[in-house]
Length: 287
Length: 287
Image (cartoon, rainbow over all chains, first blue to last red; front, side, top):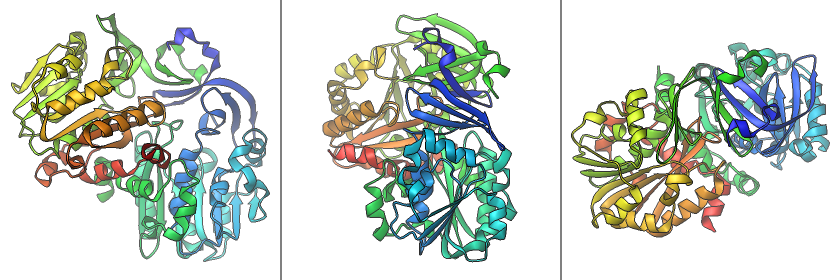
């Protein structure tokens, strides 16, 4: 369809560096919270969606592209999964995917902005689903960076950073001090996971983040996938561990139950997603 | 940036099923050819770009995402690469990538619309580059479907279908008769390659195409990658062969010289791109 056939007011776009990605729909709710501008929309293609500071975060019918890929490589490969830390993740999707793993005893979810959780519960209830009522979910509205500073050494089996781009409240989630604290509070045999931006739209941040995480933990690798609503649609998540790259080897005892519930993730997909590193990025990481 | 900060007239968008992808820039040239509406733009982010019937085809600084992934899995794995058929590919990028392979003796490039070639040469000269002047390139302005009907059995070592979406002039590139003719004119040890749409934005066409190609050739597998300007940004190419899935095994004698010239493709990337099939598509293909 050409633009002239449509009502231009019915498009909600994210603008990034000379490119825009828009969904046809209507804005249901907007507010400026203490931390960011929150927008909830109803889209024709992907159901209800969430933007923070004008950037697409998630939508009901596209969220699995992101949450499955962030969670399962870590949860399937850590030695134990008793105690999990999620930083961010206010829409609830990461907690929901985690709780598909039956071995979990406690999830500390540290979200800075209580309004993101309240609005996600109200407008996007399928994202968190039953996770919001699960007694294993310990939700606190705090600063995730401070939380990692104050947590005791060897506290968590898995740490998942589910933050937005490294501007605004998420800026401190992409630096050495933060990663060193995450390493310190990670238990032996644990796995660290973070979204690590687009290898295309945020190429430099992506490369520098992977290098830094590798330096701090000893082992770290990016995994590549698709989140259509994010800049360029091409996204990455980076997994790290100490001693050996255990995130490359999902445990068969955990994968079967998980694969059957997934749309994107499988052990085969995961292996491919780690291997499908573009050669120009591989060259940069070797420098 | 929010919409209000920008001049709305400076965006050129493709609209698809409630989603739009736009580049900031200006239209340099437009015409209605015998076959389609051709638009050439100058974009801020990706240099000059081409749209056909309002759909993004390529742009100077994004084209390798598409052309490397279509060409090298086929050209690196076919038993011989003496004689190649390209159907479509009017911007010249596919021919250019093919000609990085020194063993090629002849490329028949069958493009239906001479205006696409003329305008690509004029506005996007880096896409075809030296290929346009290479004596091995035998360019003919014909209907590719008719060409495959009329070609002799066992004519080509590699067949590459570089067409647009299956509407308009490219409609006949996604059906059984066409694939059967391609199989017939493919030499023993040959490899067939086609773009096979998005597993997200054109999910059903993608699945049905892979199934049909697999039925016709015996072996066929999709490979997944990213072309940010195409609907959803998540794209696929499908490779096929008779006897065995030879496209899975690039020959070391060919890959080294190629990898060094690539931004995306490498043997490792290729392996990952075949494996990174989303589990929901894998389930559909097994039905």
